Length: 170
Image (cartoon, rainbow, N blue to C red; front, side, top):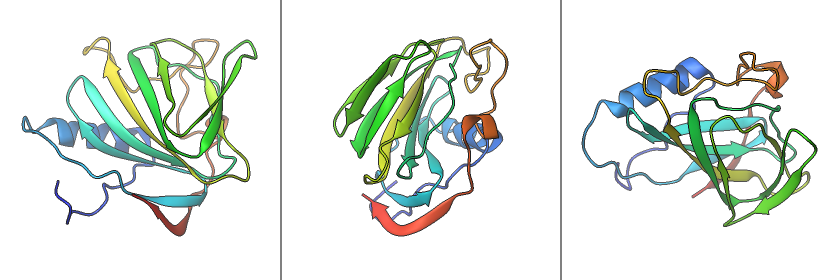
């Protein structure tokens, strides 16, 4: 990707995310990306910007106050690098930690968490880097606190209709 390329496509479902990972994994050459994203006024965006069969890099944005539900990824270690905005991360027993620009959160596979973007602040922008633990098991699988499947695009994951602003990151 060079400076004249457009922003990567937004993915809204797990199947779209999986398709982008497979598409990007097909190439065995270096990939250069620009972290550019249209910011949401409501909802969240996901742009798969690079991937291999064992690793993916996703640019994510959340509108002010946007959040997700308590979940874990049983087959993926992942890291969030906060580029803009702030959020509070929550653990399964009420633990909290506020993070902001230039902070990093490491989530080992199976760790339960959820987070909410700071209310009234600028849109949250983060890079999510995920690494598969077992290449024969679904790397995009999510589970809830009971260990049941948990769809990332569901109402339980606090998904709401996306409304994009005219502002951009990057």
